[in-house]
Length: 414
Ligand code: ADP
Image 1: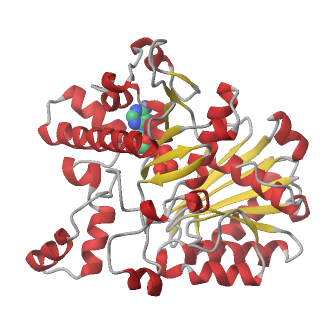
Image 2: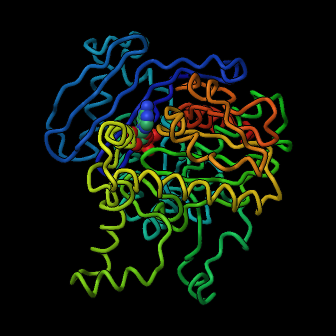
């Protein structure tokens, strides 16, 4: 089956077409036919497209909204021009898998989309006002283009965290606020943490029940997940993806009183402060320079900029603090796993996070760490009792596989 995977963000759409089926999943033989991204939808958008074994091509197109983007992508992929020989018409797209950001308390696993499910995703809009509306637009646009006979599956960022117990997901605020508005911690990046846990157990030859890890997804967005016996018992993001670790532009954990103080002192509304904490904070906020870790590291090595150094220090310290907290929460972990753009590619940040963790049995092997970039592998020394691994994430692959399994009514291996 050729699965179109759509990841519709607030102003960008990432997509892939993956050929897969139950046999290919079993043999790890899924095939990526093409991938790409449309950035800055709403105006003159930048389109990046890549065939399975080709260079990235960049172009621009005037795409006013999500529906225009999906329409453009599907028309392009099915056209001769794209060179994707497996996809000649819309009939060659057999199903669509969507990354849906918020599934609230309702969706605990990937789900075939019908009108009832669409209403359920709509009901979660209050919890993710920037994301869920665009996810819905992507679903409707695909339905319009491919027809309602083409199955669509929602894969929720929150679903994997459904197992997190009340003691970890409740905020200590009046309980009626939870009852009335479902204000609680949900967690995100679930597809990534689930994929990493799955790869880890494949790498080590373990069963799901034997999988006890702290998974660290460090990208533009960052989160940690404490996974015991294959399921999360805690995670760092909360009701929204703002809580927890320091991120590219998000503050992560913060004293809630800071919001009122900034609002009063700077003459801002609560929603303006929220935007500031979402888009002007984190690495960007502290450094005053960039949200991009690679740029910060090269800046730090070229000039001794105090704020750049501080941004990196605060980032690494926060991650280490969460590792410590999760070791306590889990009663010890069998490994820690790095993933995401920073976690997969930066030996320096991994080493800095793990600095001083020998007390917990974690010793980074400098050579292994340096060599393990954008690939799976052990990065700690042989005598580490708490080993560390780097495992590249692949959310799109998991979405494609879930789509196949849901359509065929196969159980989730999670
Ligand atoms: P997203 O969360 O948007 O999917 P990614 O997972 O691609 O983002 O992560 C982006 C982050 O990864 C950026 O901060 C980028 O600088 C960082 N990154 C990518 N490669 C490297 C590298 N070689 N060294 C340090 N940071 C890197």
